[in-house]
Length: 194
Image (spheres, helix red, strand yellow):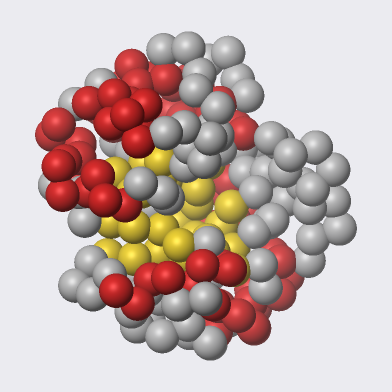
């Protein structure tokens, strides 16, 4: 599974790139736009081809989901711990963890969880420099929830991730910090061996 997470700030031609990524085989797009309002979010989603709405995951503005027939929601670690997700029954939910022990404790209400940072981050300079997550994944004992690697993943190291008992990857910096995001996405897709 390959997931792309939107950049926090709006990027030029972003929705056109998103539509192209879906046409190239993108599984899911996480819309993470913490700094935009309701109307901007609505405009943003409307620019994405409606046939891809079932593959969108909202990180905020959850009330817009009904307008667009979106049934996937992501909850940050802190929101999960504060019980924010509990009213979202019968929805597909994902969350984030930063260590394998937290992942192992997740229950079946979660479809998958991001674990990060796997490698030093591309978009957050200095973040994840001393990460041991790739090694810690060996302690995984939760097979109910899919484990999605996040952080510093690109076309050159993606194969290492799939060699380590991971169910998928989430790309952020590799896509949006590059002048040729589609090229990078294709390279990442080609370098996955299931």
